[in-house]
Figure (cartoon, chains in turn purple, blue):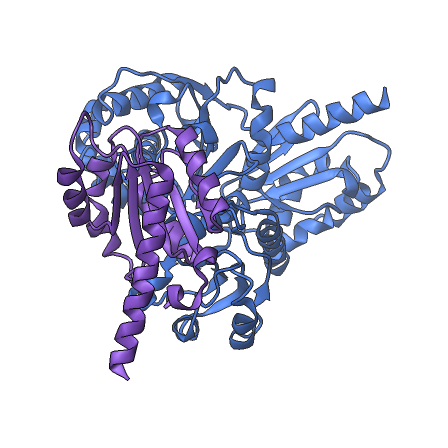
Length: 156
Length: 416
């Protein structure tokens, strides 16, 4: 598996802003922060469609797909995520993360996070500080590596 | 062939004027500074013999170095592209192929490669693409097993650097070129574009009757659509065209569409201002039957026929009126194919369109009002809009000569 053999800090991340959303400043900040943490970043920019995200993962061999949304548009698009991802044959190990402002109007994280996890995301950050979100990603990756090692051990 | 005329042609070196010739699937067009000739082709004759018989006197007045020819008469190259995603590898390779003058393109998504039927015809060139340079291990024996079942003349790999040596080892005579996708997922066009244009050139040289055209020119013969695409930035020198616009070249065998990049929402960032796509077998002479077939499968066509006050019996007729109706149908079908009504390789934002330029055989058959009638029917029926882009007719069919005129202007200015 990619994650086991690749040092955490050299992982590839595809990111961008989903749907008809032009919040380019947040998108740029995200790219800079990922870059500073040592990830190889492929930023698709604003106004990105779901299929472009998955296709970019295929072309780059990315480990993480990080979708951002600032105007709540993600909700409409995210309903399609599982259906679309199922069409791709080699994305089972892809880490799916979404963050930003994930609803139109207001909503609590307690309601929003389970909903997005049902849509197929592993990590959901609703109105969370950028660095806190990226820390969550690192923790998730480390946990996955540990779990995979455990499974390997028990299979021996 | 008129050898006397060719000898004269070789001796005429004392003019600075250029002779431009376009050899189409149905017409010859010859353009000089002050004249434009057009002739219907005689398909029972060799192209050069036919050309010399009809325009020998004009050609005789020019030296070989002053004769420039473009041609679509070899039918274009057939291409099969194997890529790993629709949005990047397949789309980028398709874009480069269309802009290089390739006409017929089929695509295969690598992850589903076993599900595609094997084309029985000979493919002129297979293009394999996928992955940025740091993403290796994309292709495996599944690719080689598929390729082993194909009949092709040329094969080129323009994918990631890591897989290139293995691909080279496993595929005989494969040409390895730099990746068309860079590390920022942007398109890199030049190498594949040059390769395909060169292949077109070789194809012409391999086809006896087109090859003979080199008896009257010492310049490279280019694909006509490639030349038309190059002239588009210069179009307002001759026509009142307001950007963004599309150019429809509805001819005898295919229909070409050249469009401003402003008209598509695209992840494809390139230096071209205009892109091209082709609908094969959508012409009114050589591919008349497939045009009729496409028409019969369009749910709005019967309404359109009623609007034009004819019935479907018109498809069986051989008359001037039947040709006109076919031309009108071709316009309608093309607009449908590039609109959101049909999901295609691209969807053009037709409501943002300011001008539609029409060129090709269509300008000889239809008058402006007949074209505008169809365009207006399309906008009302399919897009529910009163939008009405301006129709511009290239009636003399000389849009392809603009690049030469511009070069000449620039040359004069430099001399001054």
